[in-house]
Image (tube, helix red, strand yellow):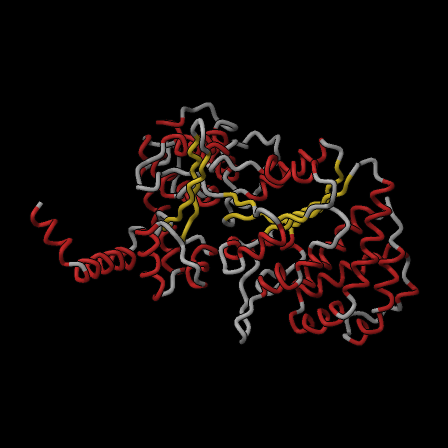
Length: 456
């Protein structure tokens, strides 16, 4: 067994690598994700609408959104649409993001991608009029007029890089841009309109990925940066003269602003987990099969060995890794990589699998605050997330996962949605204790149930 083969398989499970539509590793999981389909739900809105659309897309971090958004881009390009796609975390500090940062990131990427199709003059003029203020912030000592056009355009990149890398200057930069955001959007929309006239494509689409990773910040008045971005600045978010798809933190979708967000953006499209277990905890064979296919696609690219017993010691070892992931794709990738680190030669054995699971549990135990174990016990019983910030944080941190199942009959079509505690948490001692305490409290509060059980 060569170290080269182990390294190839290890890198095939890179958890941070989104897949392109033609990637040999791609597996279509729509049937076990509540029949979610980004082409039908987001793409056709863009294709069929007479007006520019502004849509939100969400799901758990690492659940496959970036891969699905790449599928959307490919579909739209096949429909003669021009797509500007960017990963927002390369422009933003996700621990401290505001609306202004997103506007500047959109501006920078539109300029970078379309400067050959439209005159960037209005945007350059906007930046030039702010230049003295930026010089006063010690961002640069260069005279704007002395820069070539290409270098002037590049100063938008300098601005976004400073916002991301220099926290001490953020508030002042944001204030400068906020005070003139209306004129910036006007200049940007003029640039977009000209680009669309000159493009062979019929429409322009901007896809801002990874905004779902933005951390929650709450001020003294209880307002959050999520509300500031998606609610208070919704008019600006929706005011670009083209189609836009923004990702959004899943916890915001289930906040008390949910109805208002739907009113602003229409249906919010959610990518749930692959359903490996039913709501009652029993294994869901089609979902488990899909997760195993995700593993097989990566392995068979480098070796013709049988999955069992060639790559995995037993079916139980493979099934255990897939089930403990909770149907979360990135989790499965990380588990397999960790198991491979404890493997000198294939197959991956039970001991390596157990070490990987123990490492995953460690990470989640460190994630959960002491007061949250009782909340997790409640979610495990009720299969729902109450409308409360503390519970939504557990959703954001992937301690709680969302699942969907479509029930279809001749005269009805129903989507059943539920939440459950991540399987890596379910055998942690604090969680087991919280569940036992909750059950004991219920018996204490309802002695009749205990009597009925004894009688049975």
